[in-house]
Amino acid sequence: MKVKKTQTNPHTNIGIVGVTNSAKHNANVSVRVNLNETLKKLSQIVSWFELQTELDVEKGLENVKEGAALIKASRERLSEIENEFKEIKKEIQKP
Image 1: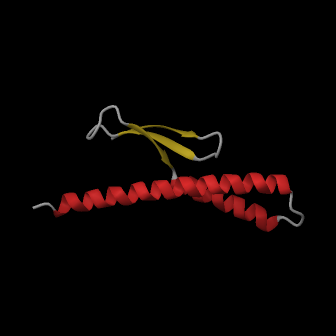
Image 2: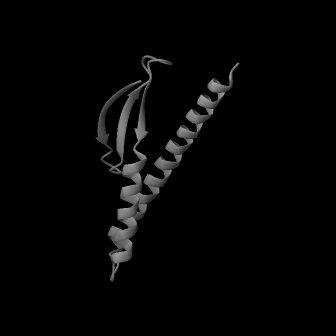
Image 3: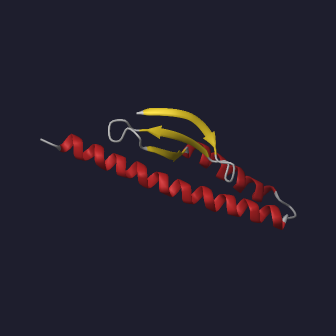
């Protein structure tokens, strides 16, 4: 597996990594969410809401949209990780 330089998605500020898995497909390049960065950003959004004494509705809406995108991307990545674990389990259980 070859890992390319980490980049940030400008729309969600999610850290992403380009990955080439040469064992399966030489030209297969996918975008992978960095779960640690995503959780940090979600925590920052939650903290922002908790610290507000007078809510800026426009900024709040931006944060909700960003949080929703982060949650969606995290769920997709967790599903990918689960599938990878299942594949590993299949491989090690082969006779």
